[in-house]
Image 1 (cartoon, helix red, strand yellow):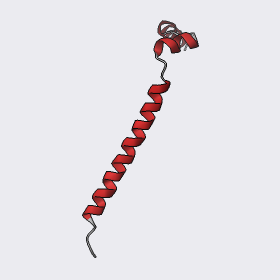
Image 2 (cartoon, helix red, strand yellow):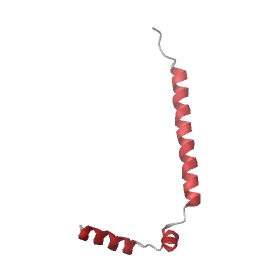
Image 3 (cartoon, one colour):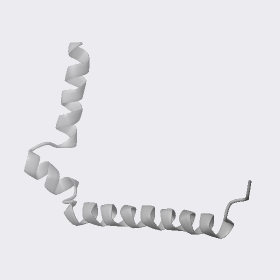
Length: 63
C-alpha cells in the first residue's frame, strides 16, 4: 500500500475551508443586508420586549 498524497490532501483541506468561508460570508452578507433592527421589527410586528415578557409569564402561571 502506498501513502497518501500530502500536497493533494492539503489542497483539498484548503479548498474546503475556502468554500466554507465563502458560504459563511455570503450568508452573513445576505442576513445583514436584510436585517431591519429590533426597533423596526418591533414596530412592524407590534410586539415589544415588555409585552413578550408579560405574555411569557402569563403562560407560565397558567400552567
